[in-house]
Image (cartoon, rainbow, N blue to C red; front, side, top):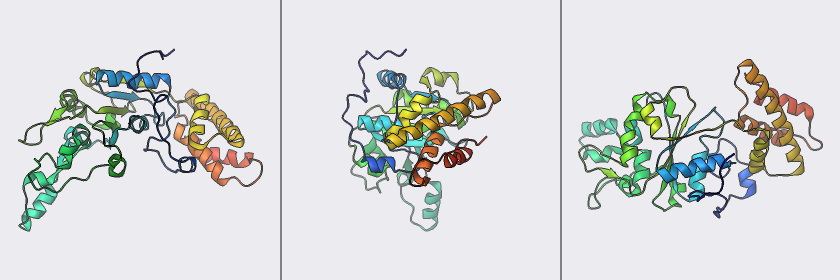
Length: 317
């Protein structure tokens, strides 16, 4: 049982958050990164509040498709904060999240005799944008210095959110080399970092940092001690139905479809667990619902079509 009677720094039920029109929200294709739809639980809301209260990053663990990556943009939308994200790969270095020096452009300009001062070739990373937006725009240079302003990530979305706070998603941190999480301890703990020999870049406001892990690689103990950690289980049948309603609406025929597909996901999950295979995920459940809604002909729902869809969307192992 999760405690619900506490002072909430983050409370999606009390905030008046405008949503996109239903037709736009339900008809969208692809993985969502706009924060418009997220079916949370009391445990998830509590974890977000604990991370905000302590100022620590929130590390989300769980199988692919359990809702880890979509939590951060939802929190940003509910709070009205700016949103940035970076997906980690095996080549990512901790500094890439802070700033990158474009040595190729610098060399090219030098060869043509057009080389400028080094700060012109600095590209702010997501943490720099989240720490101090104004500094990132000017690449850390003072107002009296003429510099080409950096292009903000998610510019269209973030232009509408003028507040000082931001949410950062660092996705799939377990894919990084072991030294990357440890190298992030100082900037995330002190909320500052340096760019070359210039004065430190200091956070105007602390960002809310969300990290995700598929547990492909064990994270350093020192890093885990400085995170709040939440394990996200795969949604059960009832939560799958609520997720489908949030995405596609609650028409009578739709509810029957959600029930049918959720039953199939539940059965395949039990089968997969027993055989040591990967069970169907939430995106695959939504893909099945979306495909049937788009492909069914007029008249009663086609059981044959649905069974064929299951072979394509759910039975992948």
